[in-house]
Amino acid sequence: MVTAATTSPIAALAEPGDPLAFVLPTWSLGLPPNLDFWNISDTATLSVAVANGMTAIALDAAVELAPGVSRGSIDVLDKGRLLARIDLPQTLGTRVSIPLAGVPVVDGHATFELRTRVVADGPCLLDRFTPAVRLVDLKTVYSGVDAPPTVVAEFLPPVLQKVSVYVPASPKASETEAALQLVADLVSQYRPQPVLVETHSFQPGQIVADHPSAPLERQIAVTDEPQPFVELRSDGPAPLLRLAGHGEALTDQVRLLTSDLARLAVTPRAAAGDLAARSQIAPTRATLQDLGEVNLSVTAPLHATVDIGLDQTRFGRPVRNVTLDLRGSYTPPPASSSGRLVVLIGNRELDSWPATGDGHFSRSIHIPNDLLGRFTTVSVRFDQAGPSAGCGLDNPITLEIDPASEVHTESTDEPRPGGFGALPQGLLPRVDVGLADGGFDDTRRAVSLISGLQRLSDAPLIPQVVDFDAAVVSDLPAILIAANGGIPRSIPLPLTEVEVSTLKVLTNEGATDMQVLPGVSFGSLQAAWTGHRMILAATSTKAPDLVDDILRQLDADPALWERLTGDVLFEPRGRPMQMLSLNDRSPTEIPEENASPLVRNIAIAGVALAVATCLAVGFVLVRNRRSPGRTRR
Image 1 (cartoon, rainbow, N blue to C red):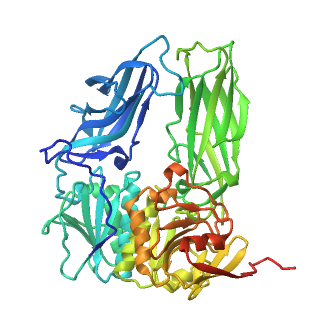
Image 2: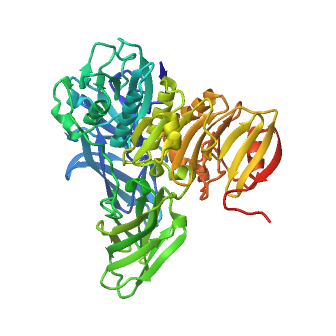
Image 3: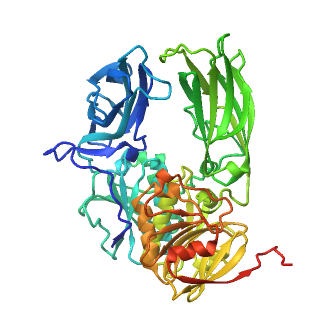
């Protein structure tokens, strides 16, 4: 049995008749899909993952040249050594193949430099806002075959597109927990590669792969057994890595696979002793480098902007009252010019000050809590004013932020933003997982949720499967899976069915009962703050297939998790999935260009009207109840 089938990014054959060549879009390798090159000449360095037995033979892209560029070329270099040069086409959108022959592969990666040169058609080359060359829809072309692993140490390739996880048809809690930890560790380790996950089941005595592996796929089974071991088996249609053990010993084998100790397992079978979880919680003071921000230098004519990413998931917890102690340097403006530095989040200016002749600055920037998201981009911009030489001939200026600049944070009980924006940081590092039914179907649903949440964070989740009732009353954050319904009313979900044809909607202003006639079946995924912990609940009105359809859509589009806002994913029978903001105290909007046709954010001016619009059925507003702490006059 298999679920969570997802679309592989592996494209069509690179060349007709060549069965060993295939294409991967660069986004599936954790690289940008487009590259911009500025001015007369510019460079960019790329590092492409290459699996054992394969070769990266070309980089394929569509080319866009800026107006005024008559011709251009692009070079491929290895540490300054020219490997290839091609001319760039003049026709907009023409695809080119940039050869990568001769690029050495070190530690599973082919690293090379691309250098562009362009020639102007007239006296002025470019304006400063338009890249001279843009490579669009980048794809890496490979040849060869993903060599099947023969020992544990080489089981995980440098690039992993898909993992199939096997659990027994009736899994124990320890096997479900091991599968969840395995998925969390793998997705975290390969991030930002969007590893696709499928969950399979096996019957007793039939622990073999049930299908041949696709290129760059790995298959892994977890079983609760008295003797702990990791074993690579090749007696099925594909190699299968079996992780076995009892209780914590099983989890130790999972941790072995993604630890550096795995490199020592140069045999088909190994076993790990006690291995601690990789909990990554940043201190209240951390440098930008500690938080993964290292590319903090920009050179450009007249205006230079460095973007700093503050990722709450990097802190491993929700934070507030963030202060950024910025240190940096810039090219001092000449005597005939002046300069100014500005710090912004979006269009909101946080601070600004005049540039000085020494070219250095030190500034403390407070980030307002209402601007904090899961990921917040702080832009530092240096503007130089004065007479311009024109024609793109101004001397470039450089702005650099010191990676040792410190970020100060405070932990917070209530995460901001709320709703889906509080995930996964509101669940880190340890999260209880309660399964109402506890069978294979609930296990695959939990795998789907853990893999989606983990794609948002480098800090690994530590899921622990507990009794459903224990997860309901626990003090820890929890994932509750009750696909057939049955979330207790003690959990303040934004949307629940209290009676047939009657919905309870929890808003910022209190609770509203709403009748929907003649009644409706729906599935939902809801993110709720209970007052002391975050809850992520997958539930329905006795319609588990609708919960599964929501999870299927999330699995099919790995980037969809990043675009979730509000606090409810809501799918009524026979209608598309919708995104609602019901009790989210800090809702944000999805940019229109990123909105999925299946997922639309509904602004809740009147919550009852919005839900009724989704249902397209009659409704009656029954009454408003007092929310805790409110009084009526």
